[in-house]
Image (tube, rainbow, N blue to C red; front, side, top):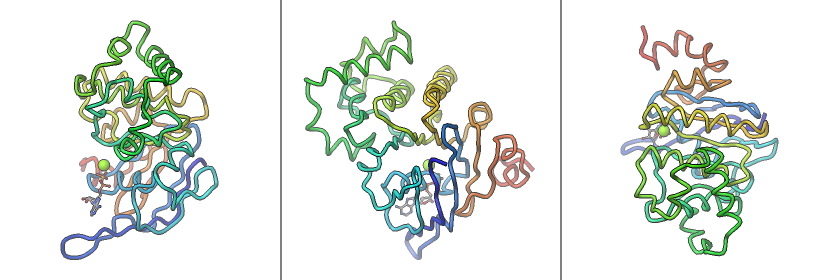
Length: 261
Ligand SMILES: Nc1ncnc2c1ncn2[C@@H]1O[C@H](COP(=O)(O)OP(=O)(O)O)[C@@H](O)[C@H]1O
Ligand SMILES: [Mg+2]
């Protein structure tokens, strides 16, 4: 197991009283596989990613990454240990060009986050030729030698469509030395052709046999197609896990999440 979450509990305070979003959750992620985390809107999936990557304080329980405790580390430290993340709905940094957006996710930065951008902004300088070469290699390898992105390295993030920005956001995760990638709704808001490209990119992520992908998705055909394992989050815990077929054919999952009576 690359990641073990033990007895994770978190309360959020609402306007009147607090509510328990995670309630003694236990969850283990198998190394080298693609695991899909599914669950209704507001069930706590993104919150769980925040907990793993160090963005959420105030929870109890243990997190083990490769058998070692991860909690109480900063997001930057956690990224340096090898956990990369695609944030839900976030496009590229609009005021940085494609190349600098790629460089931000490289090993010595602190992972893909607005937070790390603020910290590392000063570090981005023109002398980083090695990173530039790496970025070009990644783009060529994922999108083909004649791809449009390699020709648009100096175009600003804002000049790309949302779908293109999602592809680049996934591509830049290859810049870091990540062994666990957390992808929050990679296909949301993206057209079918790009979804197919995203599928190829995610398969490439695990192709080295060393990288593990944990992804949150509402696109069930995509989950059935790409995931080796599937876990269903509801009422603060993983209620069912197994192969995507096993979980998606479960009666409770069908009733309460898929809306099939
Ligand atoms: N910092 C916070 N304070 C209070 N409530 C929060 C906070 N962050 C998220 N929530 C609430 O917790 C619930 C779970 O959110 P989230 O993890 O984003 O769900 P999802 O499963 O859709 O990704 C939502 O109801 C959300 O409004
Ligand atoms: Mg979410």
